[in-house]
Image (cartoon, rainbow, N blue to C red; front, side):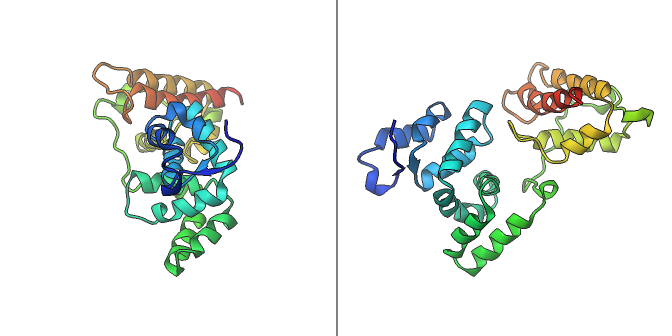
Length: 233
């Protein structure tokens, strides 16, 4: 394993060609890139933040090791046109010291400084994708058990349940949407666990494509996080 940071750019393309070309396509070898910097590498690790927990841990370690390089390389992506890469870059920049990100933005001019300032000032609840997801057509609220509030205060109304479902769809591996915590605190733990289990099992129905927002993997990732945390209260 290398001990110094290396740059995966034109200058090193002859020394790290295979690792740089293959690893950015395969999260399973992400650890091999921990010492490496560069725009291509920064974007790859930003994308990996939304992957399974093992790959996410490697990505977090990379950002902790290369905050200055990451900010420098991801600011332009975070200010580019809407898309998955922009969303990934924005999420990654929010992991870095705001002062480091602001200094990186200054190298790209006043417009970049303003754009980054807006990003950094955005509250967790307002960090939403450019296009909100839609609930799977097969998921019917009437088929879910009531989501009861703590203290015998009744159940959430259908519109509120729909909002909770959308929150679950905004969750990423290891990174629940900020709105999940207040819901977890407001709901009865037993009812919440039962409701989340039903959501997860509903996602396992035949014909649901793995990896999609409506798949069992996606529902289980968020719903299990919510229900497990509630049971520990």
